[in-house]
Amino acid sequence: MKELQVKDLHVEVDSKEILKGVSLEVDKSEIVALMGPNGAGKSSLGYALMGHPSYKVTSGSIVYKGKDITQLPPNERAKMGLFLSFQYPSEVPGVSMANFLRTAINSRRDKNSLIPVGEFVKQLKETMKMLKMDESFMHRYLNEGFSGGEKKRAEILQMAMLHPEMAILDETDSGLDVDSLKTVAEGINRLMNPEMGVLLITHYQRILDYVKPNKVYVMMNGKVAKSGGPELVQKIEKEGYEPMVIN
Image (cartoon, rainbow, N blue to C red; front, side, top):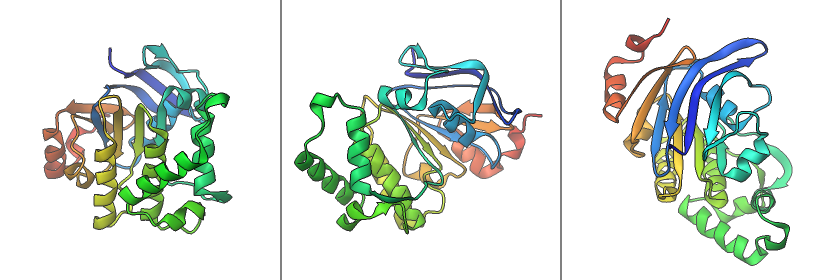
């Protein structure tokens, strides 16, 4: 059984159906790309998988680690190892990057095994160095005044520190220049391990030049229009999404 299974998922927002029977799978050690144009439902799927309360599942199921989590709240999904990086990360004035991350890590631990401050700071500095982030970001308020590239690196930093078992990366490449894209992609590749799966949501081929997917799904109009291997990325680059439209 695959680690994450989405089965015929239908989702509404404000009584409007936006996901119309999505089925896909992601296993441990896999990078699965989810591609499609704007408005296809890719980000909506990410929110639904994480349990955003505005995304109402009307039918179908989300099964993770063999358990139906369709009705589970977001914090319980996170404790099980699910992680979502946002396309547009929010600013959190008054909360430093370091305090946010330590609180997040400890929220997934038993009260008797909280991460020691020294160990946390050592891990944080090493991870920031890997992502080419200046140590001063530890003390800055989360995402406040960050550039687009810095926000995306901060999202990957969170993933690195939280060690999720299933990471949903929502358009991590959006708005990145070439150097930032390479740095973020390098971070994703370094963090991949046999116990983690990644669902990488993107419009474009460019990040997939650096982060090689095992499988590719294409979403159109709230449905999976096509699936295949990495060769599907080249087909999309050559022909676009239009030939895959589902009415």
